[in-house]
Image 1 (tube, rainbow, N blue to C red):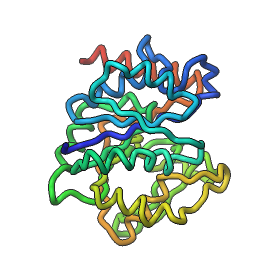
Image 2: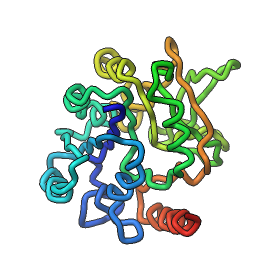
Image 3: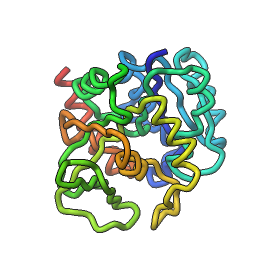
Image 4: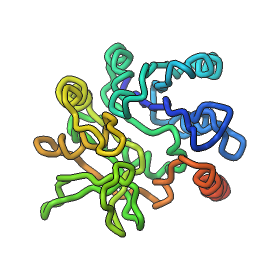
Length: 250
């Protein structure tokens, strides 16, 4: 297969105060995970959904008729890095040319952004990592760049970093080559930095680490609302309005 989409979905979504796992939380009447899989149907040959062991039964029931979905499990909530690597055995079996990663609550991405990423990846000349970003006020994430626009650092609000008023935020979508994914698992994951506030083994610090010796390519996303994720009921309400607008425009 040419492209696998990894969807880390082991979060419990406790701040949503829902009776279902976060990936099954409905936005405008449809579970977020179903919206994601439909959104990427033109781009992903196979979807690997990573769930926690406590939600494995619910995920198995939900996906029992989905032929293009495979399940992997994250045994402990140690961070997004380990969630992404929980899919490694399946990735090695499938042997894709390109690996895309997206968070389970990033459901407001535009088809124009996905198509641009597809155009930039999947060939022998693609960068080891490529992803869209947005410049926004009150960023949740900010990538620091040097005078040559190379990513050299990362600031994360959830880790207690001092954030700029305006910053460069990811939109929860990343494309990697197999070689970069292997570096993530074989080298970086051996001793990654822990989050200062969460103590988690996170994925985003891998980006400046990779950029020290390899090409990391970014491009502007279509709209700043693509960066909206769902952590609280207020986030879900805001995202519902964005999704309604997107569906109306299409």
